[in-house]
Image 1 (cartoon, rainbow over the protein chains, first blue to last red):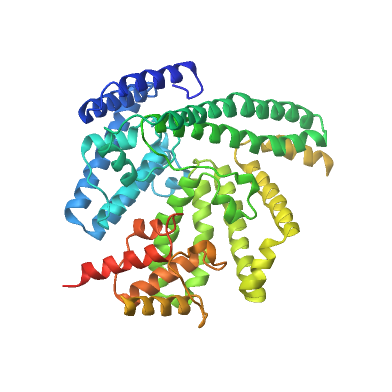
Image 2 (cartoon, rainbow over the protein chains, first blue to last red):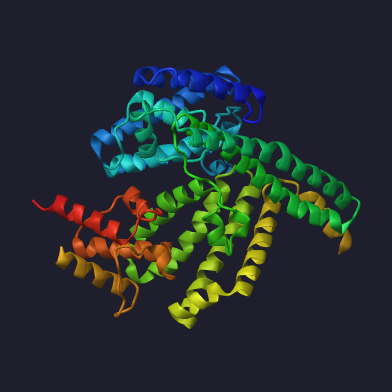
Length: 398
Length: 86
């Protein structure tokens, strides 16, 4: 079921009508479970896909129970490794050719929301091992992972936040103002996808035709319209799911904060797909940096730079198995690395007060924003394989 | 608690390489131009080593949220110390 459809609006409206009929926890949990299953079934195109989904989610639950019961670091590490391996296998990442015959990757399984499921499961496994995960029931686990408000493309909600909602599911309806704001948020999302993302697509298609006939304006149009499309489409989706979730009392984290106004690439990632950035920061960057810096404190800064690059590279690779996503991650990894080094040099030369003056300068802020925005647009050249017309154009000019 | 606070301040001064640094409970990372992700982890490691406590990934992450500040960091540390006291 598409989020930009009348059927989705009817689905949400029907769920809401029923949801607020009773404040019984059992009724609401059963209703939400039924709604999530119904929504999920609209994505389960074939029996093998559905069976693979059941297997992955079921094994994840068993792994979680084991890690919780044993509290062994080796077991937790093994389970996390298995989650990553199954993600790479099911998404058919080329890197597995090193250890698997090519025909092993020739399967046709497609599991909806697999990347998001894997990230959420890793977070649960780590938190369970460290003893900070809230209690998990099978029904709660299934609704957390397969809930319609984050199944397809996030945001990556943390389990303890979901658990709080699940425990307080009998809360009263949102007050009039909150309810209207939630609907407003949902409708904003529809406008972003239906109007703004569609307009950006139109500009992109027109620009592509012009670029193919050798016009530089076409290349410029493609360069800026695709990032506009990605933003409006994804931010619109997030508005819809955040609004829909709020209507049943589930609070989702914000996923965007005016990302194209970022003053550097580190700032950009604090504003773009925020739940992914925070997940990577917590479970990739901070965890590995802490482990390394504790053992080798003198090399901490250098290792920190390397891990910043690796983290952003992984953020790119996570989008899919294509090499274009690896290139996207590489461009962002290098960009963030250069930003961090530049900031450190500034601090060393200008001192705390000098950096504050530098950051307050309107001219520097404007220049930094323009540079960051154009660098991000450049990185989106690698986001999908539409780079060919641009290459053709450049080849003709040189 | 006074001893904990004083040692906590010493850790901050070491990590931020500033002997005259003063901290207040209501201050947070955004009040320090050099409190970035790398410094945040260095601070966590230094606090863990000085006080012989361990922070979980989720706890370290929680400390960076907008409603958190030095005061809530100190409260978390105090709770950890209380839990580790036999």
